[in-house]
Length: 171
Image 1: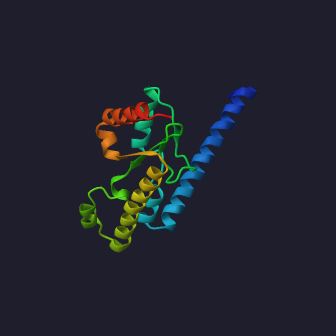
Image 2: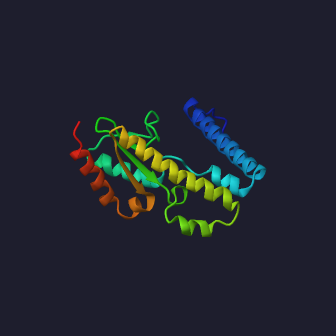
Image 3: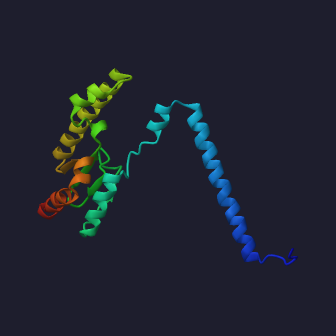
């Protein structure tokens, strides 16, 4: 057994490892408590992201690669668009199939629990999307909406449409 004293650098490393281990354990315990305290459905719903979804990130990376600069999740624009070109007045929304009612008749049939709540909520989302479009168009904005599956399946086509709109918009 060595009686040599650890160097301060090595000691710092061990302290950091312990700190990270403690943080990880606290997170797991907190997550477990949350999960135990509420229903599975409620827990799953709380984990759904409202921004920076995979489709949004894919689209933004492609636009950035093409040299297009934008703002994301711009709260001071009505509807809080996912991507905004402020000078060109272009608002881009990336809509999820379920939440925004793509193929709504099929969605109605798939919903099993709390059916009236979800149908009303999705119908209101569809109406709200329409209201946002109308308001922004009345204010002189160009509004582009893409379904998340469109972006995942044909990213190039979606980015081409945005790039064409940006290039054609005079400001």
